[in-house]
Image 1 (spheres, helix red, strand yellow):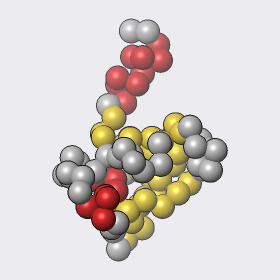
Image 2 (cartoon, helix red, strand yellow; image 1 turned 120 degrees about the horizontal axis):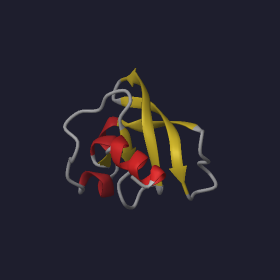
Image 3 (cartoon, one colour; image 1 turned 90 degrees about the horizontal axis):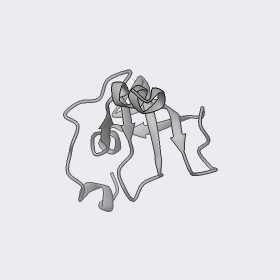
Image 4 (cartoon, helix red, strand yellow; image 1 turned 135 degrees about the horizontal axis):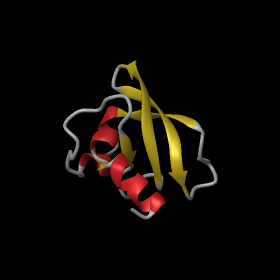
Length: 86
C-alpha cells in the first residue's frame, strides 16, 4: 500500500463480489464493480464509470483490497433510481 493510500480511513469493512465501489480520491477517478477475489489481497474489477482514458468502461483491472476498502460503496438501487428518474 502506498503512503498516501495508507492515510485514508477504511470505509468498507470487507470486499465481496458484486460490490460497486468509487475508488478513493487521489486514485484513478473511476467506479468499479468487484468481479473476483484473486487472492493475496487483490481483486479483479470491471470499470463501470471512468473519466480516465487509460481505464475505459468495460476494462478489467486489478485493485488491491486496501484500495477498495478505502473507497465509497455505491448503492446499486440509487444508481437505478437516478437512471430511471424514480
